[in-house]
Image 1 (cartoon, rainbow, N blue to C red):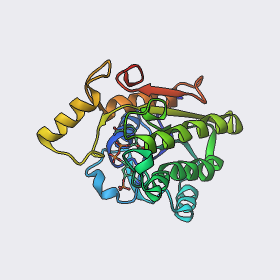
Image 2: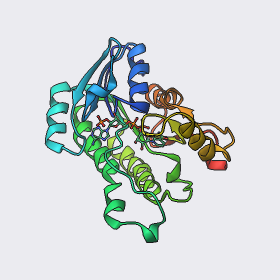
Image 3: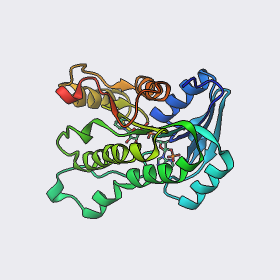
Image 4: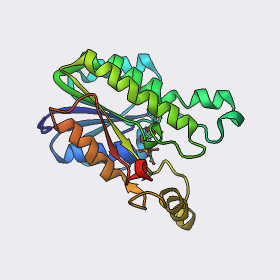
Length: 234
Ligand SMILES: NC(=O)c1ccc[n+]([C@@H]2O[C@H](COP(=O)([O-])OP(=O)(O)OC[C@H]3O[C@@H](n4cnc5c(N)ncnc54)[C@H](OP(=O)(O)O)[C@@H]3O)[C@@H](O)[C@H]2O)c1
């Protein structure tokens, strides 16, 4: 797919990985709509990106947004959706565990409500995460959610073909998702990535390159691209 002149909706496109994908798409000439609950957090965005407010858990709001922007060629789902539980499963508050699945429900809403408005050669990208296939201690919730996101993509890709559906799975990425600052932030990323083959946090732009790859390559569907610094082999 030549993305120049194509229309892309990027959910979670106002921060971190989604914002980096929105910027890379716009730089290549795509018309990008970056969506989140509070789009003001995107700050100044370059020409080619417009901002829209919508919660991916609000199906009525999403349906209106899709109808207003249809038809479109590219959907990127990078919205975290809500909170995530951390810790040992047996000690975990079950409501916190269940709430972590807001990301899956948001992605499911985007696929179900967005695909009918996607052009025939259109493409969808979901962002999962390395814990989907290799969970480190405390990551049972994001591991379960990531695994479900990847299974959803493999199950739905055949149903929507020739429209394409792929997943990009990031490892530890330096984005505003982490509230830590300064030395504390550096130390946390150092510890989290020490055993990876590439022992540093990745950048949002490095993940966005993976997103752009599965968008642009018309021979790729139903698969997962890892952008993880070697997490899976750590
Ligand atoms: N950073 C990492 O290390 C890492 C690793 C593996 C996987 N991931 C995954 O990568 C994706 C992007 O993460 P990130 O690091 O870029 O996070 P981020 O910087 O916190 O950005 C998250 C984005 O999602 C939006 N969002 C959250 N809930 C939403 C909702 N209910 N409806 C609409 N928009 C919503 C946020 O905007 P509003 O708050 O304005 O809604 C924001 O634009 C997520 O799926 C995350 O799980 C990240």
